[in-house]
Length: 231
Ligand code: ADP
Image 1 (cartoon, rainbow, N blue to C red):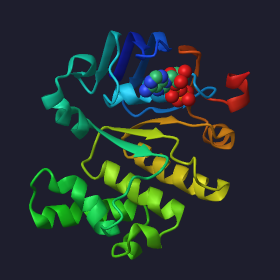
Image 2 (image 1 turned 45 degrees about the vertical axis):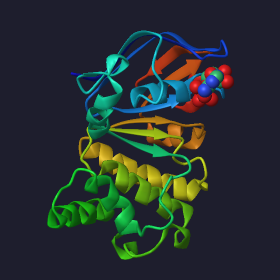
Image 3 (image 1 turned 135 degrees about the vertical axis):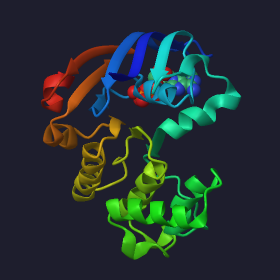
Image 4 (image 1 turned 60 degrees about the horizontal axis):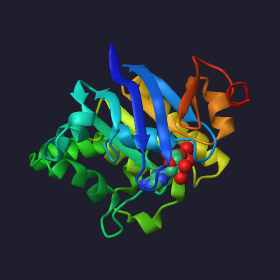
């Protein structure tokens, strides 16, 4: 079953740049998909449309059964329950502890404290951070901060995890550790869509790779190396 279906999408920004056109892709439940391509090719635009940070001018975007292109502003929360998002710069709240940063994502749903505690500890264990619950973001390494961001993104149990350059600020070893965390999350059933420039990661992980170039999806490979796809 397609968890994400994008059909004939076109997106032009107000300045006239045609960021995506004739863009179609299907992503199944449980997939792990890398989105690669040169800078300015449209990767972020594609990713942002999945969580409705941007809207297409034409075409259809269905995410977890929700018609994102037609979704009203007051209904966006429905989409946000279906997917979590991880960014290159973590976007943690500096005045909250690790625990609070993750719990915050659940508290908006007014759940009871015991349930929140259980869920938060479960995801912190999954990302390997149970020994840092009381620390603040500025007391953590970059890799640890990204683990907190991942925990926060999955604490609601979303079907889909969207990652926009999650290892962009990390060294190669730390990046691979983050990839292992993401691979575990994927094995537990979460579909992952990740934009990246990191050739090593794409080569090592051997997942599906889609290449975007000048606003179009030009290649879609089941497995293989970054170089196959980029060249
Ligand atoms: P990538 O993520 O592959 O670097 P983007 O999706 O960010 O590519 O950008 C695709 C094209 O759209 C680029 O030409 C970029 O300059 C342009 N673009 C991106 N965001 C905006 C925006 N908010 N307003 C105008 N143009 C934009």
